[in-house]
Image (tube, rainbow, N blue to C red):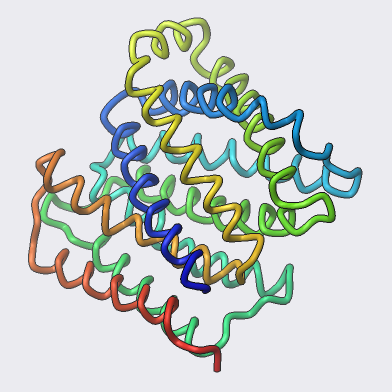
Length: 281
């Protein structure tokens, strides 16, 4: 991954972990729906500045909408049953594996040796974080919801990676995708929560506004990086957010810091260095 993309992805990882922490502290479904509305309002003016997606791009947009909606629903389920320091690593830990598989099969983008080593080390570290059982075994429903979220993240990453490479450019796909995704998920959330959703969003307007702004910035950087780097490598590097989520959980959510968690964080850092610096082999 080029140095500029690596630096921006580190920043995006911090923003990503922060908005997840905000979502974890409230009603996850309503916060996710509300932050989507904030993102769509902020980016809506750019729809008049970018090309309309070509007909060949719309199947990718529709597929991505479905995957994004499923991911958010799975994430909300996981966060209802497990703390951030455990559910987040599970939800993110399997993503590089799924993404590597999907990118290899669907886009013929297998990672080369240096990047593959980095991906493996990151997955090892995140798996170790997820298996830290200081509070007992992970709730089974939360575990499978997080695994489902990981598969869906990998799926939409591959689809979005293809979308950002369409002839009209990454900016067109990004703007249209964010607006349509926000509207679609809000409708899904309304079906699940009913009119109470609107009141929940209104009551939590400050965290909704903050999370929506952070989520938008993080996702725009992610799609930009996907447009110019191998998908599996971008997805793996995105998991630097686990480091930030661990720190946020300890410092702000009062979760326990154990030697095991610190060692796993060091593994993740080593994997990030491998992806950023090792030459393809």
